[in-house]
Image (cartoon, rainbow, N blue to C red; front, side):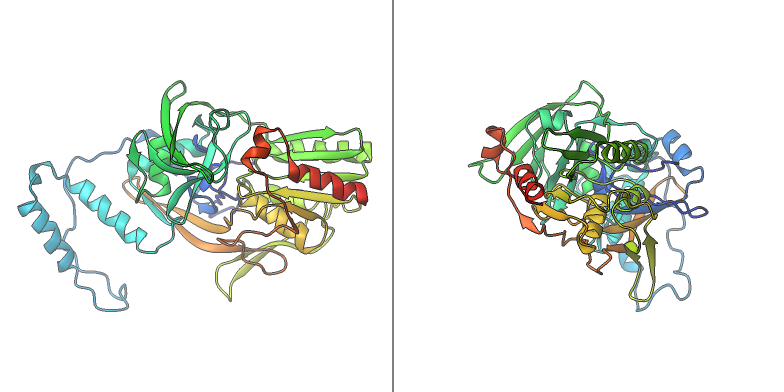
Length: 428
């Protein structure tokens, strides 16, 4: 399976479409992001990844074609581009530190503002430096704190810390709000900018100023970055004949590991299965479909909607080896993207009872376009719908049985969500 993106997002070559859900983004940062930002991405799998990883951001030189007339039929209403250049010239003539102004930085800033005008946090412009860092993530250079970030209510937020990674070891939790990075406020920061500030080489430190529900004030968490290596699936057969499959990401290794997990479950013939997707930020769409297909015998697993008239339906793969096993899916606010696709499908087909907290709501699809100067634009082009037609994006999926997992539970080594799953399976 060719991988041309980062966990939490989906990238699909134009010539041979291959999907992978975000976001996206673990903070390696692996997002999506979310991340970068979460969601799914379509992209050209040509020389972009290779070339962007080799080019340095270059701010030297001038800005070309400054006063070219807009091409015909580009504008739906009158727009006077002279206004743009009037402001440009005013800055160059009157700004107090005008000798420090850089034409390319001004130009990239204008493009960034243009893209931000959509109001969509997952539609972003990346200047060459960020595009290079993004391509490094796609190429598998993962060093950071091991968490995915997103944006909730305009605040940079931890979506999911990865098990046994620096973020979790330092005490970060899903839902933590990042108010500052190394003392610099995150107010107004886009997700890509926050990712850039938090990422860094193994052995270096970053300090995140965190606010969490229950905190009287913000607290600083000092985290030492490390290489992020995650085995995406763990299995365990308990004495009470309950088989637990924990999926931390839908990554390169997930398909093979999940096949082994299913085979092991069938051989052990448990009385029930717990599928733990808590704090799972997402991964490959195709892998999500593979996973859901082990319970769903026929029908649509997820729909990709570009507009009310245009959509793609992704069907099950016809395996369904686990369809007769009572199943509970565990989710929380850190379950996003591919996790939500699997959860939504199993819930709609009544193949599992969903327990936990409402999921993150990361169900948008992006396309990644390279520009001629090695910068790039990521544009939201579609949304995910569950088999029942429910829009995942920004809404998340409500569990059938809502059970919280509080900080006090964590401190006391209690897991009420897992306990509820066991109770349900024991009754069945």
